Amino acid sequence: MIYISQNGENLGEFDESQVKSMLSEGKIDQEAYFWREGMGDWKPISDLELSEQPTETDKKDSLPFKRDKNLPTKTQVAFLEKRGISVSGLSKAQATDLVSQTKEQESLQKLEEQRQRDEENAKRKLENSKVTPKQLAYLDYHGIRYKKTINRAEASALIEKQRDRFRDSNWNRINHILYPDLYEYYGGSGRAQKEYEAAKTKLDELKKSHGSSVEEIEAAIEAIAEAKEALADDKLERSDTIDIWADDFSNDMYPNDPSIDTDQYFKVFKKPNKSQIKVILETFEDQYKFPSNIINVEQFFFIYYKLYPDAVKKGKKPRFTINQISVSKTYNGTASTKSSSFGGCIALIFKIFIIGIISIIAISIIAALFSSKR
Image (tube, rainbow, N blue to C red; front, side, top):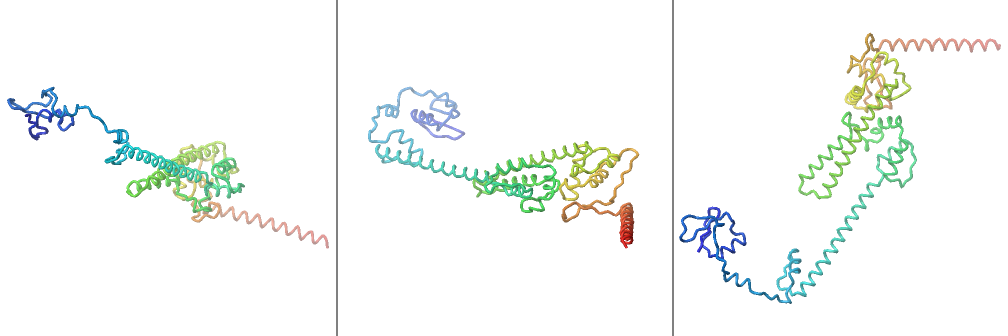
């Protein structure tokens, strides 16, 4: 008899056939120890020499086996058991019918799953092809004609074809006022950044919720991807805006209105570089909560002077007709400023004086004409 010990536990005594069986079935491993009568200490099981003579169990296992032809085949048994179907008491014919029925059911199930996937894909494709409310708002505001059946791709192509920088500047300035349900102004941080953060928050909430479906999580991931793309577009657009401003200033033009004469300002100020323009526009957005493209030339150079006093040319002193710059809290069509300078009052009195003189001269001429006719 052989005594076996494994993991510090004595498993008992066994004969050789039992030990061989235990080794082959993995009930004991090579790290086990054995002891038999006549040995001094326990030794690793790997040192155990077992007899090569076949045991009674081995002899029984080696006898030729004749399978009953009416029993299910090994392939049938494996197929059915894999699907949790018991083959106990089944004949070969019954197993054949059951396998055939199971395959047919699985085929129908796959077809149904494919149909559902196709329907879902078609639904998503249709949703993606629908024109968006923002596209319709843009087209309506700019007076661009379009057919009733227009889709998203056609609207995008039409908008791209009709784009105009100065019209878009005004649109970006007022879209959140004309269409508050579609647009919202967030100051310097930008709408795209807010939407991206909201999409990430929603996905985190869905992951924490055990009742969330796979479709909800996939939709949230897709929303993050779209928001991330919009954020990249927004950053690119803002970068392009800075480039446009820098180019216009270099050509002595003011971006909001090229007809404005910037000569008087550039006689006093050095031309701002791109990084300075970016800081000025962001400061305007943060302070006044309005899009940076609403800033007028006087506000721009006033903030420029406050942020970069060294930008004033040597020997020059900036003079502003307004000493307090503020944007109207309620939008009234244009950005408004408050003026209270002495120079402004003198200019107004001078204008009234000139108008009075012209009126007196005009009245005198008319009176003289009537007198000559008499």
